[in-house]
Length: 330
Image (cartoon, rainbow, N blue to C red; front, side):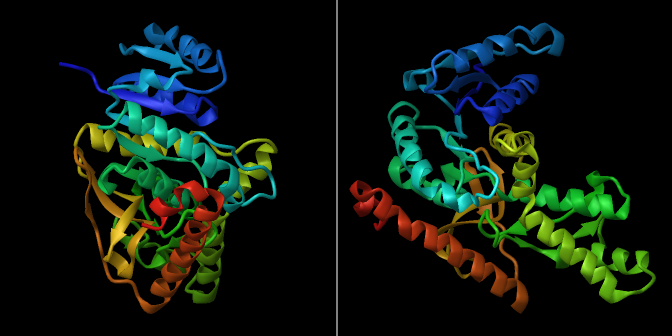
C-alpha cells in the first residue's frame, strides 16, 4: 500500500518538530521545503539518521524546490516570520502575506490535490489568503489555532485543579489572537464543570473561583506571547507542531475527530464567508462537518468581537497585495 506523502513548507523550529512527529508516528513519507539552501536537507538527514533508534520506516527529503512536493496528500505551512517580544500576531500581516502568496502559488501548481493546514500567523488571514490563491475547496484548506489554544486552556485548568490534563475538556473559539474566546461554560473534568470544582476548591467563594478562571482565560489568550517573551528570540514550536499533527492524523486516518480549527463558515454561528475557529469533524474529506451550538449572550458578544478583528485583518489584504484584490474581494 502506498504511503501518504506529507510536505512541510518552512524549515524552521516548527517545521523540524513536524518532520520528527510525522516520522515517529509513521504518518507517511515527509518532504521538508525551505528557501534556505542546506537547511531542510541538513535537518532531514539528521532525522533520518535516528530512524533505527526511533524505529520508523519512512522516506525523508529536504528540498529547496517546490517540484518535490508533487503528489502530496497533506501540506502543512509554517513559512513566515515568527513573533518577537512586543509583537502581536497581527503585526506580521504585511510580510507574511507576501510569503503566503508565494507558498500558495507553489502548492496550487505542484500539489493541487492536497489538504492544506496553515500554522503561519496571523492565522485567520493566512488561511483565507491561501484558500483564495489556491482556489481549493474550503474543506481542504484549514488553519491550526483552536487545537493549540484549547490545549493551552486545558493545561492551565489541570495545573490549577491538580488533575491529569488528559481528563480536562475545554474549547477555544474565534480568531487566533488576543480576541479568542475560551468557552468557560463547557469546560469540564470528565464531565464535571470546572467552575463547580473551582468553587469547591475555594470553599464556596464564587468570587474567588471566578477570579481564578478569569486569570486562566487571560493567560490562554496571551499564552503565545508568554512563550515569545520567555524565549526572547522566536515563538512556540513544540505545541503548534503537535496540534497540527493531530489535525493531519485525523485526516490521513479518517478519525472523525472533533477539533476546533480555523474553517470557512457559511452561516454557522452567524458568520458568512469568513475563516474563524470553530469545532469541526475532521476526516478523510477534510472538514466534514462544523459542530454548531448555541452561545449565550456573553459568549456571542465575545465571538462577534473576535470575528470583527478577523474581518479587519482580511480587509487589509487587498491593500498589501493589490494584484490579488479581485480574488480577495470576490
